[in-house]
Amino acid sequence: MARCSACVTGMTFTESNIALSFGGKCKNCIIRDNPKQKDKLQNKTTKQQDTIMNRITLILATVLSLAFTQVTAQDLGKGLDAYAAGDYATALKEWKPLAEIGNADAQSLLAFLYKDGNGVLKDATEAAKWMRLAAEQGDADAQYFLAVMYYKGEGVLKDSTEEIKWYRLSAEQGNAYAQFSLGHMYRDGEGVLKDNQTAHMWYNIASANGDEDGGEKRDELASLMTASEITKATAMAKECMNSNYKKCGY
Image (cartoon, rainbow, N blue to C red):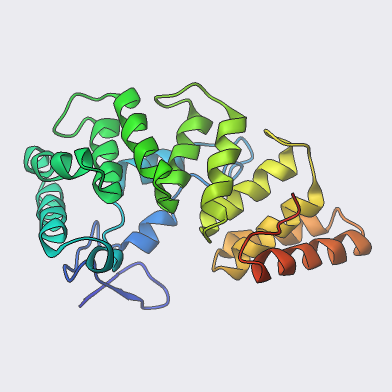
């Protein structure tokens, strides 16, 4: 079992019985460098968006052994091995047939090949196409990254309505990064009416799901809210989580 050099918790990781490390970091730590922090430098920098979209190779965790055949898992694993070695042509060869028959993980991985131009011509439109196919199958990570594409106008027209749609679908599956991003959108009134209570709710939920930045932003926002507004927002967060994200204030 490999150990991630960047996890302060000392978390170990495995991907379909293949322990992989990208720059010494596991997937969970790599995602920490993600595009959810739109206002990290107060100008909504996209630096971390570019970092995550360039570095991640995505999601081969335990679902592989549960959702797909052993052969499928092996082919995905071969592609990851090739990708890690810089052999993008082989990664493409392993992933594209799986993507074409509807494997959501392969579709997401293929999207990143097209996004970065690794083993194929760089093509943001094609990247968005494959990411959408995975997202439409209910893949929470793909839904999150598709929302980011709508935020950046990468392969699609910038569209805050679509952005919040895909963040919401991902957030309702428990994706803490999408939940954090929804907090931003409600706080800033992007694609929705500005609503500090709902923003506080999503920041609070993201924090409860392990996103420490969510707690920081929740507390910053609380300083602008009344005690009764905070009480209501906290009650909303409890109802949202207790209902498995079915009753989230909208």
